[in-house]
Image 1: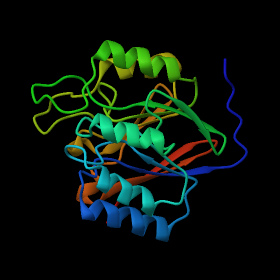
Image 2: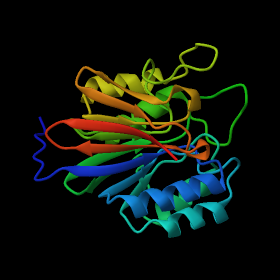
Image 3: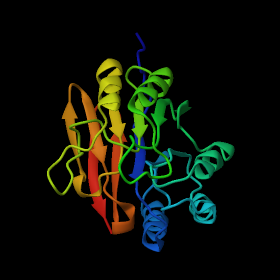
Image 4: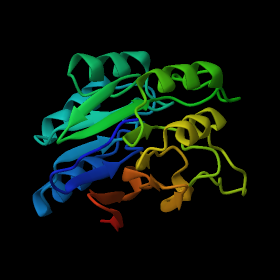
Amino acid sequence: MVIMIMMKDVDILVCSDLHGSKRAKKLLRDALEDDQFDVVVICGDFTTGGSTKYVHEVLKLIDTPLLAVPGNCDSVVVASLLQEQNKSVHSRRVDIAGVKFFGFGGAPPSPHHMPFEVEEGIMAEKLRSAAVRGGVMVTHTPAYGMNDLSSYGHHMGSKAILEVAKEFRPRLALSGHIHESRGSEVSKGTMFVNPGAAKDGYYAKVRLGKNVRTVMCSV
């Protein structure tokens, strides 16, 4: 059993699904000017197809410690770049500000054959190998049933990610991917947050302390 002892509140800026947009870059710049954060978490889809130039531009905007995973629309090259820049929590565990973050990017296979798709079984294995009880889970795809309803009313989340969440009970689970299912909800002690798409001007602020407090934001 891992006991998480937090000396102070940790403020997290959470965004996802930038998709190469200028609006998302402005959102990050303005949010970081307006508030102080201990960590920035980006839950994938920096791009739509894998422009490393855009990823470099985003990384230059952020002086605050940053953790990210690739999204299904990002390429393997983007995933490698995040790792090279020491910004990746994809298939890794990272300790920042006394908080243990773990994660896995991409999405399960789809009929669209996006650049970064991973079988559910592999996703569960890799995420589990990095997981820690009571930490912060960062994925691109939401856990099944948690902020994952498509515009057609279908659950688009991952059952593998839900399985790991049930096993390790993270205090906080951050994801994106389903743009239209922006929101936060608590299940079995875990706060699940989908900040919405940064390309549409959405992000979230989370304060992690004795309690977990979330504010859904837009610009």
